[in-house]
Length: 71
Image (cartoon, rainbow, N blue to C red):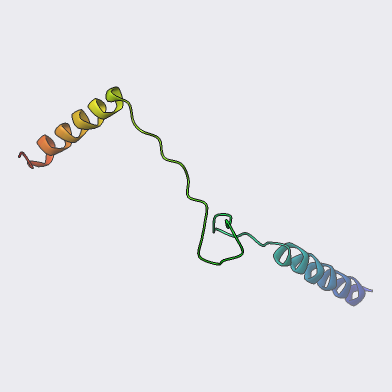
């Protein structure tokens, strides 16, 4: 009786692991534009505002002062 349960548990765990691991198919590549394998849709960039540019310049100046890279 004990061996029957262990056999059933082994089969169920095998089936469960196959179902869990076999169904995963994730692609990290962006969508294609045509049937070609090298043309992909590039994300549209955003032009930063003057306020954003000033903030980046201030952060860069703070970093440069902290590490001693004064120009």
